Image (cartoon, rainbow, N blue to C red; front, side, top):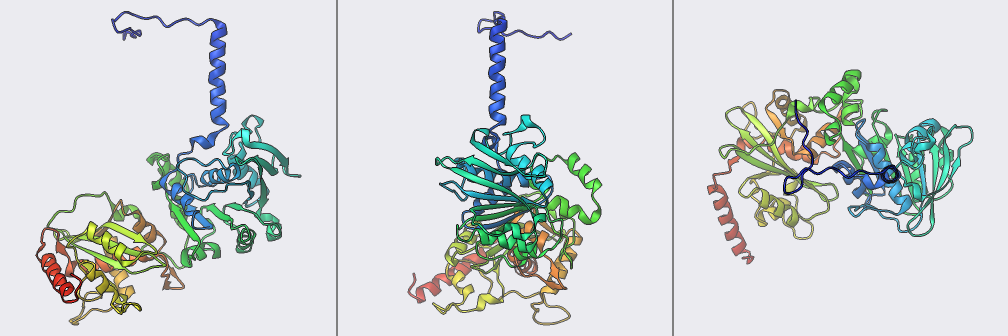
Length: 499
């Protein structure tokens, strides 16, 4: 029988815990209960966002219109509730890098119906509506709730509430439902609109209109259960300045263990599993790469020196400049995508510095538009990168020559077909750390049979790299060509009076 050890002092003498009389014990229990009550009525202090949630919040600093298109059960609704509570109260945490309101705000929140608005949005903000003891145990701290107004005809539902703002005034929140029609979303100007689940386009546009004069925010948290709607399509295929889309899958959260994921997948039909687990809308014309994600992703590892490597760049400015790095396992004919980079509104100087830092001496493929001349300097875009020390290939990307041809073509479909064959046979793999590339692959699709060339920057760079590495890849240990390349550059610089 195991013997339980008593507490001892530093000399080894057994200490007996001091006994408390009933009055002291009652007082201690009262303090503990009050502490738990304070924690439960101030849940906002306990919020520790996942990376995708933090990314969504931070996007609000530049983008007044945002959508969080995410899998079920990942915390997307609470993410929206917490941000709404921050804006209503003005109580932003130290880590916050998103939009800040320094004065009271006018807020709308809305869901599909009055019932779902009550059961989901109101619950996350104020606590379970059917249980009076849970009032004030949502995202809005209890001591900030000044007053609430009941919604007529909907049991336990709120129509509005007054929330104390840290500036000294009061914010006002109103509850709406899509089933009321877009007319209920007309009229007044508001600072913040949070839409939980996707509305019709007319309601979404009304909400944007209501925030124009205030330069306010409209953000939506949802799982794309309605498929490729006009609202989803506009963010996927025609993302405009001031808009942001953040996605999240089950793999982006730690609170779902493998057993839970397996149990959830078992109750979903095959057609909806990607939508439920990855937040991917069901596309009318289909994904370009209809492969299981787990079959094309591997754990990161150190690339052996004898693997030829190559990088590729897809040029951009308003849309991202993207770089993809690949390595070829020559023994097993497997191409690994092992690094990625994607950035908007930066100059070649910035991009070149990243490429040179991550992959000195690794050749870089580029598309045909790299031959275009800059309007200001008259220098080709690819040459600008060469002048900055990047080991650019001498000619733009083409597919490999076939059937005895001397040169390859630029057919995108032919290249994608080769990539799909490699994906399906396990000969094109992504490192697990290449999350942004995986995000693009999940959403890369055809519409009416044609490739939708939006948010495909890393996919394009990956295509140039994967289909070039066999011809132009170089071993990382082989620096001779890089040394020769830099020697030629220095001569060219010297002739131009640069060095």
